[in-house]
Length: 391
Ligand code: AMP
Ligand code: MG
Image 1 (tube, helix red, strand yellow):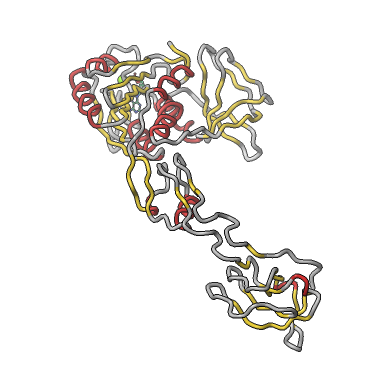
Image 2 (image 1 turned 90 degrees about the horizontal axis):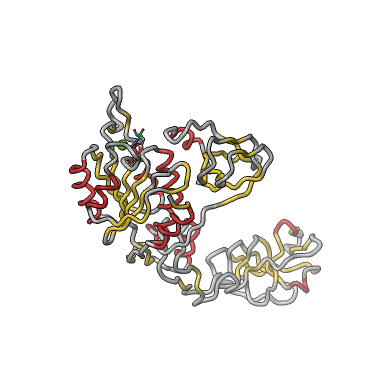
């Protein structure tokens, strides 16, 4: 049995880079950028008013100012500002030559004479200067960026209407177990619904991958072998759930070996997830995840998620926090690194969720983080600082 850190290193060291493809920028959110994006313009492209008001010379703001034109957004000024003059200007409009500030409309009165008088104490420039955000030719986004909605705005603003991104890894998913029925059926006594496959499909897609579902393999070596054999030739990553424990019908490790998968580890000092198995087939990385849904969720989060991001060129780190725990926590054994579903309260403390073990998927559904419990620790007292990572 290896440590979790060793398992993590082994998985990450086995990663390979996906190729790239070009997509319209509108489809690029959630994808990992493969090239540098340069700005084709200065931003802002001209000196821009940041408030509605009057463009004038700072040295004239004590004077009564003659209004010489109105400049809406989207229109060029026609007149330069001279001593004692101002132009009515709207937010986003180009600042006329000669003006070095915009006095806010709220800080002015319109005199019966038609002149404008500044009533404030002093004013900022209220001008966003040409190129102050980004200069033409400057890199605005770098390779490896996981593109967010804000990045789509950046792509739009520099006219990058397509982007080169990493191809999504294809993740194959196989459930194993004679007891499983698909969710639309009512399980008979002794049966349970297949929840893992659907969780793993959703988790894969949320992580920016394509998924391909191969169905339920019965606890039969030949059947499992046929499905695995097909899946490893088609997918970048293959996830099996169940069949990796010590039961008489846990055929997954032997089937993987027969199918040509080189097993790199098959037991990890982590709880839940001890039987997690990992190996490499020519061009496919294979995980045998435990059958219990909480275990497979957590192992996906801990091992598969960082792997797929690395395969797409994105160095991902989970959002990790050290917070005060609001409950006492105790576990029976302390020989493994533990992960426990928790909630972060509105006050920023950690609340333990009622958790009956790794089959208890509802507890995971109520969690927004997992707390790690170091090897050797079986008890944590209310008020201590604990380490949690957001899920
Ligand atoms: P196994 O690793 O095959 O021994 O399975 C461990 C436990 O997880 C057993 O209680 C299984 O019934 C359960 N299990 C296995 N596969 C699934 C699945 N796809 N969905 C939900 N529970 C499962
Ligand atoms: Mg099983």
